[in-house]
Every structure is written in C-alpha cells, then in structure tokens.
Image (cartoon, rainbow, N blue to C red):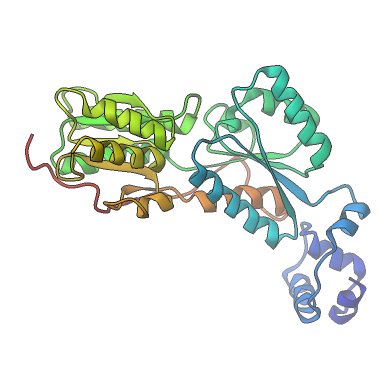
Length: 332
C-alpha cells in the first residue's frame, strides 16, 4: 500500500479508502490510486485487512433451494461481486423447515465460525422470520433475494414474478390454448406463490372459463415428473402446462415422453428461470428469463459497495424466451 501511495502521490489513508471502497472519495483520487494499483499489480492482503479493522472481508450466502441450477447461478453472481471487492465467499445450507432449536444451533455455528461481514439470503430463507429476527437482533447486515413478506424490512432484489407469469398466460392464450395445467413450486416459497397467482389471475382476466388444473412440483425435476404425470391423467387433458421453474418443467417433459404425449404438438410446456436446463432438454424450453446471476451479483454489491446508494428493493427486468416447447393448438 505504501508503494501504491508513493506512485499515486497520495497518502496511505487515501489508498486505504479507495481499496475499502469507502464513501466520499473523489473520482480523481480513485482514478489515480486505481491506476497505481494496476501498474504495481497490487493485491490486498485479506488477512492483514481483517486484522487491521473490524471487518473479516468475508460475506456469507445462505441457501435452501431444491433447484441446483438456481443455487449455482446465485453463487456465480455473488462470487463475481466478491472478487471485484477483494472479498471471500462462504456458502452454507440451512434447511428452512428445521425445528427451531436445530435452526438456532446451525445459525449460531455459522455466525461463530464464519465471522461474515454480511449475508445474502436466498428463498425460502429470505422469508424465514427466525433468521431475520436473529440478524436484526445482532445487528448483522443482510440482503434478501426475492423476499415475499415484509419487503421493507431490509434491502432486497426482486423481479416481478406475478407480471412474468401473466406474460406466459397471455402468450399461451394468444396461441389458442384454453385448457391449462400449472406445476406449483416449493411450499413456503413466495416467488412460487406469486407466479401461480399471476398466471391464474391473467387467465381469468382473459376470460378463461375455469382455473387451470394444479399439481405440486416443488421446484424439483422429480417433482415435475410426478406433477406432469398427474396433469396428463386429467380429463380433459391440458393443452398447455406452465411449470413455475425450469427443473420441474423438464420433469413435465419427461412425463410427456413416458406417456407418449408429444411436446409441443400435443401439449405445450413453459418453464421459468431460463437456466441451463432450458437449453439442454429437447424440445428447447420456452421460459421466462430471470436474471438469477445478476440478482446474486446485485445483492452482494449492495452489501459490499460502500458507495452504493441502493436501499429498499431493487427490481431487475425479466423477458419471455420463446423456444420450441410451445406451439399453437392443433386441436382441442
């Protein structure tokens, strides 16, 4: 740091303020210090920084999600923010449905051993009141991904899940579909509930004669197989099935294959997330692009960037990605 300060012609304190991304640093000073950092190939010593101050330069990511695709995308986004800020990332899994005593023990161990400067919470943990109350009581900073309850309680990153699901409903309706099935998500997962509600509400507004048939998929591939099998056995059979994430949509497509039902000729299938599995199954999956990696990155940056002005909720955009698993109705 002394070498950087000498080359930039500034004080050691100024270098420290730039490296630690403290507020109220002029762009001119930041540019001089960052140029010296690049020229000298300077890399901050995380251990030394930790000893010199009250921060550990580690943030935690807590998850409990049956979709490995979602979890990996969030991790990638959070990790990118950490590397940009010279931080380390700690990842822990907590079962949201753990008995209160077990959850307390798990959380206490993470807080004791991790010494994290803050946490990114993923759903359904993002709405777990026991975790939120513990963090608030201990003064621990956190950012919530896709919060459902008490959204003003802490900073968070969301998309309009309800609006995205409504867009799916309108797209399927425009193609002539009138019999629908929906594969619902995990219990206690706010985003899954909002997607279901948005889809059903949009169909009602479009004039659908009856609500869609429903089956629980739980955001898992295996759950999608079971839910798809149940929906296909209904009479009359749906001509379009909306699954509230891509993993369960892929399971529905396998159920269709087993039942001799061709996608999209006999049944159209649409997912949600635009994860890698949407481009792995065949036909390629029509889905909602949820910027999961960017949501993780944004949440971590809100924790780490001391110049960041975001407070409250940050809403990121979504889009409908039209692929091969959805087509117009041939016969009803």
